[in-house]
Image (spheres, rainbow, N blue to C red):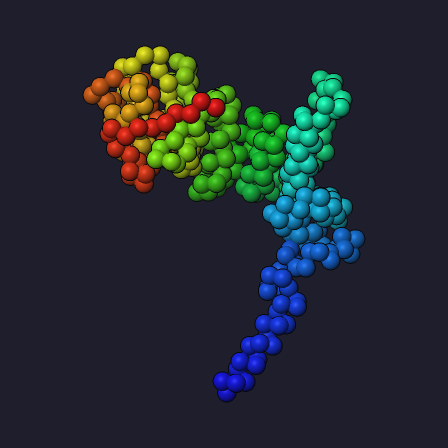
Length: 312
């Protein structure tokens, strides 16, 4: 029995190698892509899956060809248009970089070109709107519509769509995070990279009275590698509270030398203005960094630690 088992295993592995580079013939998106004939694809969702796989494999030209086939088969397939926009965007970005290094490239006319990526994202918007018209409670369609608007830099429309997605499905943290990023973008915060023990945070900078006053209020959620850095004109005992916050935070106070002087952990949003404590350090702070709850424990942030604020 053992000898027959070995022979069968050898035969099985040989057949598997001959059938698929990945040893998995259960998915059309990763099957023998070198021999895919785009014209022979008759299912839009199959074309979409193959196109997304090409994008993951950095085969952008092939992705565009197959995703165009998906939109031909189903012009209302919003995700195909969205992925096509991403693929075109990659090509356009590379062309832009090439032009910057080409001394013979024509001068910029000053006009904003209506690029293929923009056209594709606009088609995605049209497709997602049709889905919503047919089913106004489709939270996924609202989320995808917000993503498409975001790619077009139509931030107010993106925020409106994402708010509806969160309203229809409030438990989805991905919806909340996408909405939070758009709301922060609308507030026109610049970014700085803050490094804590070799871990980088992309921090939105609040360096004016209006931005410091608003802070993260109204933002639904953040990722671990996101935060908000408050920069003050002069050091003082800066007080913070959790009024109008929608998720818990850790808060880190830093002096003028970027040394941690105080840490507050796992602060919960205030449920009432009448009971909303103010947290402040015992010494003067020049900077204050807000992160997701649990960050300071996860990264062992303690008083006396140095935090690097990088100028972008």
